[in-house]
Length: 249
Image 1 (cartoon, rainbow, N blue to C red):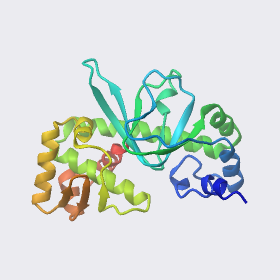
Image 2 (cartoon, rainbow, N blue to C red):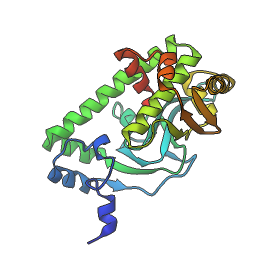
Image 3 (cartoon, rainbow, N blue to C red):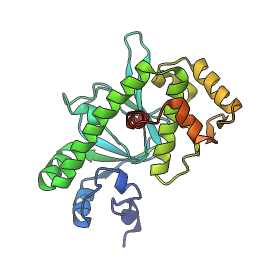
């Protein structure tokens, strides 16, 4: 038995329930697995794809994390999302067969490449896969709209609280602690994404630390009072829960 192949197979992957093969039967997952290309890890600062690159594949994050961003007219960048293990990138290329955004690794990141021509063929054969892909695109649209609401209407403190709650929820879904985690993104990246100044992010994180709602040490975060953080973020209604989820990127 080739243990390396078993280790890399979709069936053996702990992220299957978060990834595109979710809901497929064992035989269907085996078929899906044949089309998956396991890429060599990419390292911090390296790019998976760039704005304008030809669209050929989706990418599932196996470990690590990436930021998705676009260049602005003034030569800067605008971050539009962060992706972690179990999440899919590349949907931005479906429209005109070119990527709208650039995806850059925040740390050493392993990915599975899912060639679109193979996914398209599998979707014709397996309705469950087609439905999951449609649901994924629907979630992306809903989360993007919720993100616009958060960034357009909420205060700096509310944005930061909602962002941290989103990370907490995403870590929980992956079987990790939602109360103790490391940020793979810098303060500058967080500020860019939230539409704030880096000093504003640092100041509000410091205030949350002083109020013993959480502990922040460099990139390490420990949440002490989740309910208070929800209260600050205004995450009591269903709409606000969706808003928190929107920071998945």
